[in-house]
Length: 83
Image (cartoon, rainbow, N blue to C red; front, top):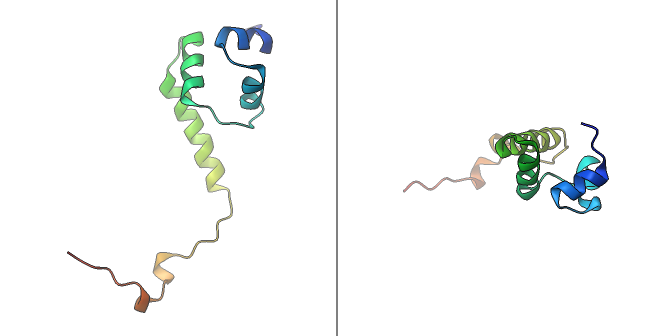
């Protein structure tokens, strides 16, 4: 596309810092940025947001969490009220 970061920030109406953080994966794509990119590229905002959601989910799936399975909880302390 022969597009520089300087040109892109002017065209998108964002700061160099905001675009740099997005490009270098230090920030996530916001809905506002998705709309800006959509308007500049004649693409779909939903496709940009779906890509960000997939990245977020992939990152979360590869984190270590200290979680106890609900099936391992002491049954004497886990009564479910029906009503």
